[in-house]
Image 1 (cartoon, rainbow, N blue to C red):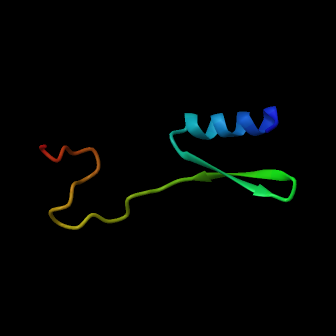
Image 2 (image 1 turned 135 degrees about the horizontal axis):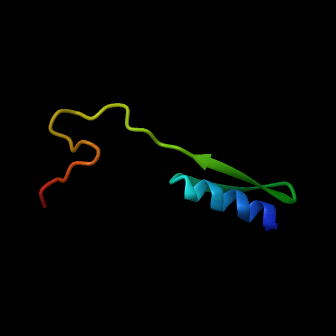
Image 3 (image 1 turned 135 degrees about the vertical axis):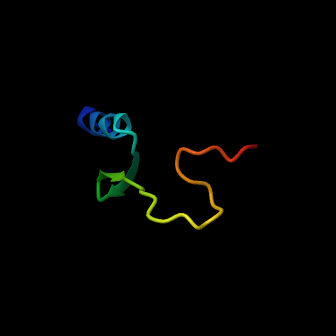
Length: 53
């Protein structure tokens, strides 16, 4: 991997997101994976809440 690839991965991780690396031809593609909770069912644990265990 090149230094530019590593820097891109580090920047993604510093933002608190996941980085996904895939091979494409002779190189790599770096994807930033963001997940956002859209809905929590009643009785499910809410973001930032402890489940009491």
